[in-house]
Image (cartoon, rainbow, N blue to C red; front, side):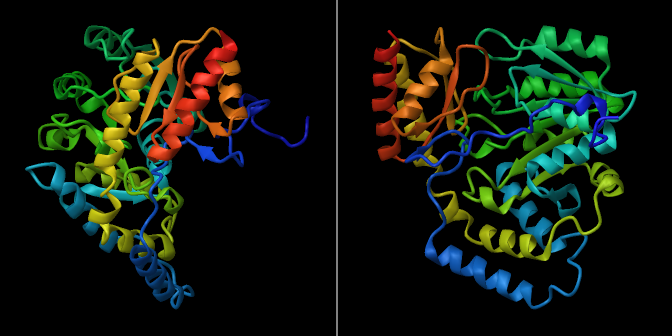
Length: 364
């Protein structure tokens, strides 16, 4: 046997990850370019210092204080309110998704999504031995509800993964579509609406949190990595029926959220208005970027996120490389021919526009 004795289906697979390169302008991982203030950083540091004094003890396994703060925060996005018993948190929304598939997927079970979509979803399925089925989106990256219904009726999935806004396209789902799929799946499965970029949605686009009272099979996930400017914190969370949270407890690792993570997240939540203060600025910059890209004759997907998918290019890698050669890192992702740019500061977006114009002239 070849060493190491890796599972056969994992042999030759490259680990997931966007390029991490030392360049002046990084616009490839959808980070918030505006970091926390000194006051916020000081409060996080103080909270971590306090937690450090008790590192000889295990953390609160139920992270009750953190879940209470997260429930209060989520309640702002729904008239129904969110209770602490409906909230669960983990190390990034990645671990949240993995826990959901550990609990509700597995051998003999199926997970469904609609491509193009987040490229980690099939990896969560693979890692949990869950059968993976991907349907297709419309040409404008919206969800064809009739096709979605047909796929779900044919596959009878146990988990349906629906990012809204979708990554990498930025497309948001209509509440009616979420309702229809929840009703179709019924008690045989879960519909997971991944709102990692939910805070960036455009005016009038509602959160799936509003639908929770009507559908006990609905799960809404969020993260502090994007709008909260806390990608380095690694804190994701969900809101769902309490029975779903109880089921996740069966598969979670003991003390999966460290005392340091809980303390830092609580301190950051105390600065929510400040950390979210740049969301409107980033929305405006996103919309201006969409208009500018279209003025260059490019196709651009409507976006409710803090990134924009644009194309199409006969050789997208050549364009990506030419932009990178000018000090700007964007993402080569999505359907063939498309590229994605995260929204940065005005100065960073100027650098991006200049680099892209030069790259397109070079490739013409």
